[in-house]
Structures are given as C-alpha cells and as structure tokens.
Amino acid sequence: MVMAEEEVGGKENLYQFDEEFRDTIATVDAEGKRIWIYPKRPSGSYHKKRAIVSIVLLALLFAGPFITYNGKPFILLNFFERKFIVFGQVFWPQDFFLLALTLVTFFVFITLFTVAFGRIWCGWACPQTLFMEMVFRKIEYWIEGDANEQRKLDKAVWDFSKILKKTSKHLIFLVISISIAHLVMAYLISVEQVREIISQPPTEHMAGFLGLVAFTAVFYGVFARFREQACIAVCPYGRLQGVLLVKDSLVVAYDWLRGEPRGKLKKDQKTITGSQGDCIDCKLCVHVCPTGIDIRNGTQLECVNCTACIDACDDVMTKIGKPKGLIRYSSYNAIKDGILKVLTPRIVGYSIVLVALVSLLGYFIFTRADIETTVLKAPGTLYSKTDDGQIANVYNIEFINKTFEAVELEVRVESPAAASLMKIGEPSILVPQEGILKGLFMIKMPESEIKGMKMNVELGVYQEGKRIEKANARFIGPIKSFKK
Ligand code: SF4
Ligand code: SF4
Image 1 (cartoon, rainbow, N blue to C red):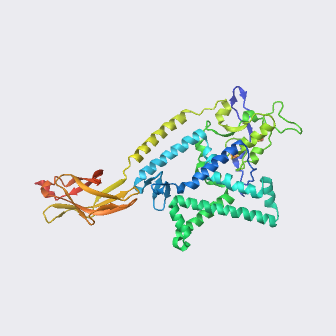
Image 2: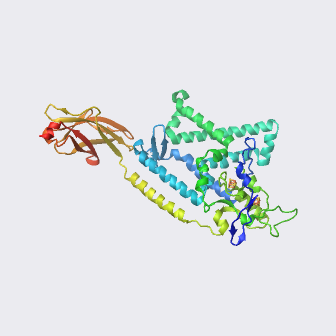
C-alpha cells in the first residue's frame, strides 16, 4: 500500500491505493489463463441514456449502406478496388494526398477529443461496445439471467435446460454475427454486390462468399468469446490511452477525497458516521464492470468508460443517504483541486491545429477537379516527320472521371498557335462514369516554329465548350531546327 504524497487544499490526501493492481490485468490469472467476467446487469440513468444513444447509432450504422446519393452509395470503402465514396464524393488512388491529409486530421481530432473527453467514444459510440454491451450482453441476460445465475449455469451439469439456454443463445449470437458480416461487406463492396452474392450460388462469388463466412466467424468469436479482450489487448486506440490522457481529461473517476477512508457499514448501520469516507466498500462498482476492474484504483487502461460503475455507485449513495457522484465524469485535477478545467492551453493548441487542418482539407475537397487529365510522352519515342514536313511527337493521355456520369471531352492546343493536334484512334473522347479512359494522340508543329529542344505545349480539356482543365505536353524537336 502506498500513500499519495500530494497536499490537497492544505489537507493531506488520504487516497490510499494498492499499486499491485498495475502488475496484472483483471481478466488473466497468475497462470496466464483467462478469467471469465460475469458483470452484473447494469441499470440507472446513464445506462438508460446510453441505451437510447445506442439505438440511434446502431440504426444509423445499419442504414448507412442503403443511403444513396445520385444513385450511388453515400459511403463506400472499397479497399479491394481502391475506390472510396465518402459523403457522396468519389476518391481514387490519385487522391492519395487527400487520404493522407484526412488521416492526419483524424489523428489530431482523436488526440484532441481524447485529451478533452477521455474515452467517451469507447463508452458511447464504439461499435464494439455498442454491440457487446447493448446487444449481445442483453441477450445473454435475457436467456441466462444476471451474473450469479450465469455463473451457476456455467458450473451446472449439461441437462436439458442448460443445453436449451446455451444453444438458443449461441444461435441468436450467430444470426446477429451473420447480419453484422453482411453489413460490413455492404460498406466494403456495396449493398447491390452483397445482394448478388447471397442470391446466387456460392460458386458464382466464391471470394465474396468466403468474405461473409470469415467476417461472421470473426464477429461471432469476438462477441461470444473474445469480448473485453478486444478493448484491452487489441484495440490500438485503447492501447494509446496511456499517452493520450492527461490529468485534466474527463474520465469516469472515483472521488478518492470523498470516498476514503473507505469502510463497510456495520450490521443495521444505515449510513456513514465519523471520519469514514463515503465509500462503503460494497464493491458493486467492481461487480458491474465489464472489464473486471476496480475504478477506485484510478484511471486504468481497461476502463472503456461504460458508466456502469457510476450508476451502481449512485444507487448505493442514494440508499445510504449520500449525494450521488462518488464515481462520476471528472478529471484527476478536478477532483484534486475542486475545479473542472475544460479549456486548457493544450486543448486550445490542438484546436487551432485541427481547425487549420479541417479548413485545408475542406479547401482541397471542394476545389478538387472532377476530371483529371495526365499527358505523358509515349515511352521510347522522340519525334518523327509527317508527310507534310512537320515534326510530330506521340503522347499517352489518361482521363479519370470522378463523377457518376459519363462525360464527353475535347482536347485543344492552347499554345503555341503553330502546334496542332492529331488524334489517334476513336475520334470522340467519352470517359465512362467513375472510369478511366486511356488513349494516344500526336502533336505536330512546323520545324521553323520549334524554339528549343524541349518545348512546352499547353493543352486545354473542354467539356461542352468550356475549359475544365489544363495539361502540359513536352515537345521534342531535332537540334538543328532551333540552332539555325
Ligand atoms: S459502489 Fe461506490 S460505495 Fe460501493 S465500493 Fe464502489 S465506490 Fe464504494
Ligand atoms: S471502471 Fe466503470 S466505466 Fe470503466 S469499464 Fe468498468 S464499469 Fe465501465
């Protein structure tokens, strides 16, 4: 046991804590075996609010792939074809810098959000927590009962009742896992393609079918068995908490100044008396915790800020006639000093960087060209002489259409005036929707007009008579033509 040495408002900090809890995690025993957590069924005002938020967020999550914009998905994250649609905007591998900028912005946002509000995301919005605590766990309580009944059932012999309960629970888990797998696939390859996969024999879409099976297995494994380990051992965001959280971050925290020294109520004692702190050491906050920790030890990596311990403790405080909030949303410094500071210099600094990044990202997205043209000299070619005695260069041209409609384009030479363009292949340039069109063309120029070994020819790309983009082509001529 150690004593915190800080002085708090002239009063000695009485917070005593056992540092040994940091040597182990609550879900693994001394032999390294998993300790199964049976959290008590949570209830209370925070739980009710979280249930409402969860219903809204899960509804949005399931509706997401069905929302369309201009007949296309509003969000599509097709990593396989490297095509992304975010808020109706198509992004291609060529927009890589936008993706990189988005990732940097996202990382700054996450940092800022975590520094200010701790792990609110984990408790209120993370799909892992939403599905685990608000869907799978609820089904488990419904079929197997509260924590003690679940413990008893697991120890019981395999009679008809146990087989029925376990089979029905796992069947429902499997059905929900299948639904989540379909949902994830719809975000990855679109609802239409998922519909095709499930309406035709698996042999027609083997890769898609195997994808659905793999996702189902992963989700079933995570929600039926792996559970809190996903947050504790796998989630990178969870692992980053140690470096992201600061003493001013808002977290689910135990007020040690009010709670300590803790002590149990004696038989028939209704409330706390004397110098005893408000914590009656009932351990209900530990029993409801889905990650099995004791929040009275301070902020820990395992805490997903699910608020179950707040509700449990508020209930206890009400029963013993003490004010709620012994465990509450607060920060280390707020408990220590009695003042909750939200706008710290660090938050202001991160906010300025975030606003700058968001503005830059917005500018690039809204000024992004719908059609992108790349002109490159055909590899291995220099120049040639045409029948009319002019010098000609051959080029590869590529058009990328980032819109949802096919577009007809025209390429014209802007300068020098003496240069002219000869198309090779199809006369019209029709670029398919969300597609790429590649072609070859030739620029020719009278030898007398060539002013250098490498000249720049400026091209204009026109759509319905309006120039939408400029492109440059390097023109190579014979040395003698400009040495005269
Ligand atoms: S629920 Fe409250 S009173 Fe009970 S042990 Fe936890 S902090 Fe103490
Ligand atoms: S300590 Fe409290 S908020 Fe954190 S995971 Fe456990 S019950 Fe949830």
